[in-house]
Picture 1 (tube, rainbow, N blue to C red):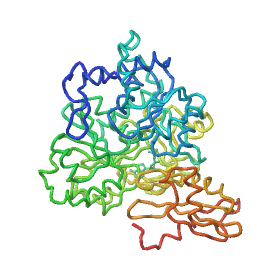
Picture 2 (picture 1 turned 90 degrees about the vertical axis):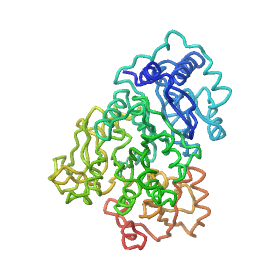
Picture 3 (picture 1 turned 90 degrees about the horizontal axis):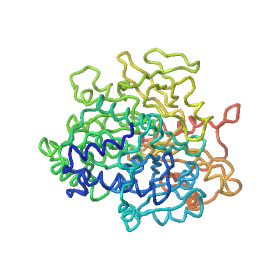
Picture 4 (picture 1 turned 45 degrees about the horizontal axis):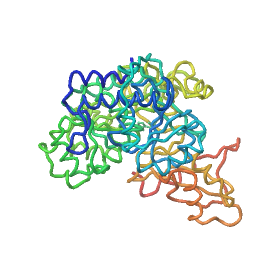
Amino acid sequence: MNIATWVERNAKRLPDRPAHAVGDTVTATWGEFAGRVSRLAAGLRSQWGLAPGDRVAIVMSNCPEYLEAQFAIWYAGLVAVPVNARLHREEIAYILDHSGTSLVITDAEHAETVAPLVDVVAGVQEVVVAPGADWDELCAVEPTPDVLTATPRDSADPAWLFYTSGTTGRPKGATLTHGNLLMASLSYFADIGPVTAYDSVLHAAPLSHGSGLYGLPHVAKGAVSVFPRSGALDGAELLDLLARWPGMSFFAAPIMVRRLSLDPALAGAGVDGMAGLKTIIYGGAPMYLPDLEHALGVFGPRLAQIYGQGETPMTITALSLADHADREHPDWRVRLQSVGTPRTDVEVRVVGADGGDLPAGEPGEILVRGPVVMAGYWRQPEATEETLRGGWLHTGDVGSFDAAGYLTLHDRSKDLIISGGMNIYPREVEEALMTHPGVQAVAVVGRPDPEWGESVVAFVVPRDEAPSEADLDATCLARIARFKRPKEYRFVPSLPTNNYGKVLKRELRQQFSDSPDRP
Ligand code: AMP
């Protein structure tokens, strides 16, 4: 089925209930939202001559128009390419080109970066800015007979190309089908909790990632999508929103949960202040035990953790609300340090180097199989074959089960750095730094950081004279997003390598293991 069908159904069942809101103000009812979605779908098809299966990218900050774009794309049978709006122009250009995007929808904030790409990326016909005159024009197109209802889609048809940065330095597009997104939503109901039309979902994190995926089960059930007016959430704003939109759930990276839980505005909120809060779903990066215990004190037992990947959208394991609340259990604290148990709709294995299953307690690579796992990487058959070999998604994450079936993550074998909830692949930063003529060799690793989770450190072997840090920063900023730039440079005469000449990043990281700021 086409998941945009949910919008049509809500328009019939709940025409006057709010579909989305900014702060305390309703910006559209389900009746209005569905009308705009079908007219936009007509506009996308007729104005731009797009046909089902064509790709349309969204490069925007969170706003109601983001949801309009996303659902209009699906309604018209097109494929959405939600791009992290904080990426560098070059990175965005690569994704547009690789995905074969025909049309880009952006907002005023990103138009300056995105608009010139029409001349750079051959396939892109136009960049439309929303909200704005172009958007209103598209919205004014009367639905043609082919878009009077959502375009029929098979569960195997692509819906969302989820670009994740690969270890090769180039992002890969996990092809998520309508069937994958449906399973991810059903699995939310099974393992996180039910949703009703009287609930709300707060978009406090980017819609191009976790928040977009968690929005789906809420759209399915007719809950209202709420956008914080500030664009960035603080404690006082959260309390106001909880009072206005009770039954609220939201996704947040661990660093954001930590920040909110330390906000003095929430310290005295007590049971009444939090009454409107249903669930904070956190995940995407490690949550440290002291932070989690503190957050449970502030928010009450309203936290659930998920472990997932773009390749199996938000769905590998979950540590349920009940697990968080079960303080009497002798393993309560141990379990809080795990990522929970396998989701209802997937099989999860931990295997050794020979591919055989490992017993409880032994760490190995985490493998996943089930209907939520991506169809493959867009236009990358070799990477798909490698990652989905034997019918199992090879996550690249290392973990171990305990005897009761709780999974603990040990390391990320792909050397991914997660800083402030954002994924940074060292290779991308290394490739940027290697373009500086003064750099002979470089290795980038994550350093434990109590504020950011991890921070980026570059070990640089200079050619003759060490380049200045300002110079290296400028080299990075010309090629990659600001948040990926190293926070620290260490100049070294050589890098530790093994017999095959591979850099031993473990040894570099060990230099931090005794450092006082390890969380
Ligand atoms: P992404 O595809 O961008 O969502 O990144 C997925 C990666 O984030 C996973 O492969 C893990 O390495 C990491 N990750 C996801 N969830 C968790 C979690 N709950 N705890 C620790 N790391 C996580």
